[in-house]
Amino acid sequence: MEFELIEQFFKPQQVKRQDVALGIGDDCALLTVPADHQLAVSIDTLVAGIHFWENADPVDLGHKALAVNLSDLAAMGATPAWFTLALTLPQPDTAWLTKFCQGLFALARQYQVQLVGGDTTRGPLCITIQVHGFIPRGQAILRSGARPGDLVFVTGCLGDAGLALQLRAAAPPSLQQKLHRPEPRIREGLLLRQLANSAIDISDGLAADLSHILSTSGVGATIQLEQLPLSTALLTHTDRPSAQMLALTAGDDYELCFTLPAEKSLLLEQSGIAATCIGVVEAQPGLRIVNASGEAIILEKAGYQHF
Ligand code: ADP
Ligand code: MG
Image (cartoon, rainbow, N blue to C red; front, side, top):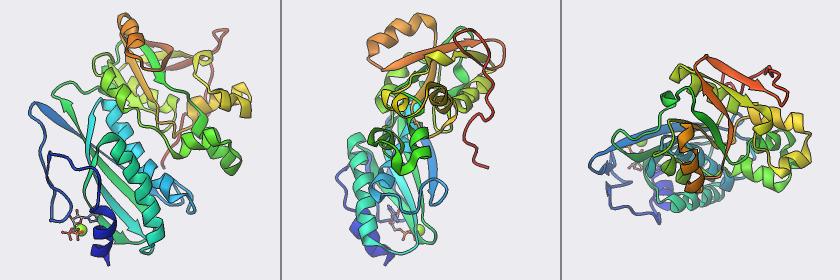
């Protein structure tokens, strides 16, 4: 049964990379890392009932399970190469698997990332993906590289996925798209390798994720509430203060937050990356959020907490 599923759903793939000496079918995959590169590895699990609704569209799930992993590669400036998939299914539902693979492999094709192995088991629905990417040795963008004086940027808009999560089926399609079909910022991550001092992807909310950069770098920051990039769709469906709170604390945006020295901001503009400057890194530890009048904003809840 397990072997039939693997043959039917996971072995046939359009992405066939030269650096895969041996893919699905043996006890291990055999993979070749290019000379003078480091392998960037990351893993993420989606659990039914926790990270997604039991009745979620399997096409979306296939996309999202890979997208959230690619987002981690993007945050380090890695080029995606391979992934493995550990799938736990309540029953071998071929209609579900067909759709899941449709979403999964469409994104895999887009980034030329090849499924090279995995594990298939029976149990409560759970999807784990591990991705592997390449970074020229020593060029990864770390969380620990932020320096006082750096400007703080975010890509895209924040809070859309958070409102979609609140409104569920009542959310407009563009917000649902942001929640269910996040686009990993791979292109941006690669360009940022030459520019950014630090980066993280926003999975648990801007305040929480930026705070990881700050504590790891031993610095602080002040960000401007009014500078947070908010989409028209978000502002159409909620008031500005709620939108700003979502942008700060809601997870699932999968945009990049990064810092770079002020003298590189012109290069950033020329790079074509759509990013907004939201604040500045300072020596004094901690994250400070101020409104247009310079008053401090206190957050009750910094972001999504897993436990
Ligand atoms: P083993 O018993 O040696 O762990 P399995 O029977 O679990 O091997 O898997 C057989 C082959 O199929 C292996 O190459 C494994 O990587 C691959 N495989 C199993 N499940 C998946 C999956 N969900 N996606 C991709 N490859 C898979
Ligand atoms: Mg196995």
